[in-house]
Image 1 (tube, rainbow, N blue to C red):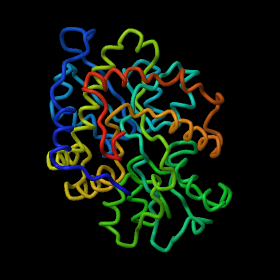
Image 2 (image 1 turned 90 degrees about the vertical axis):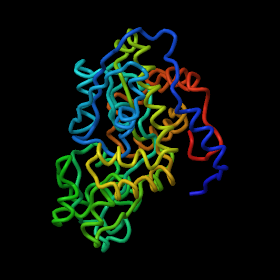
Image 3 (image 1 turned 180 degrees about the horizontal axis):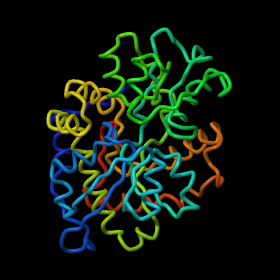
Length: 344
């Protein structure tokens, strides 16, 4: 990927300005606040590591926030948690959020990674998407994120669901099923792909989903509109710490790699390789608003193409996405970061 090269002095100056301790919004309550966040997956992925980085580097403390995190089986489970009031803020891939936001009263307020961070991993004998015909493809359930990404790959070869066989796999079982040849493909996070190939050199990344769909939105933070109405200041404080973490990740590789390794449970060497792919090359973490209308429009078009993902019809993006919170956050952090093609 083509990258704009900055002078070391310019980069460091911009990053330090973005990561410095900043005042909380003027309407923020005095005193500490505790919030509960639900994330998809029983352990955070690299692409969901912003909370761990914000925690480790004191950004939540600066905002007087205590953040409790629970990992759930899938994005649909985080939606249920937020709707039920068990969590204040949820994280999920975009599909179930856009599919149910209007009907459930949900609002997207930010993004943890707005570029796709996953690959479709297969044995090396599968050389192109057309070779998936007749193969056993690991998914969690039809309509869940990994199945959607799997379908995107084989549909690129003009295959249909009738041309493949789905095998249901638990959230933590994909790499094990690949290594024991119970499945012929799985959508893996980049760190999972690196780890799987370290264990079996016969595996490879057939398709990098970011390369297939570079304009597709990945991960969103969302809340109930009723919660947001009475906790807007809390949401802004949370998003401020998250944005500080994103900016910190780009400029402090040596610090964040071991922090992310601890959070994800992967060896630091594998997380360092993942950093190269997701941060240096693809720039998956937004440092500014991160809620690009054109990317959401593209994502909706892909969801319609896949089919079955919008049971309530096309949502009104202006109603289910509140960009004003992130606009406030970026203003309080000194304005947008510019000068690097990865920054968005």
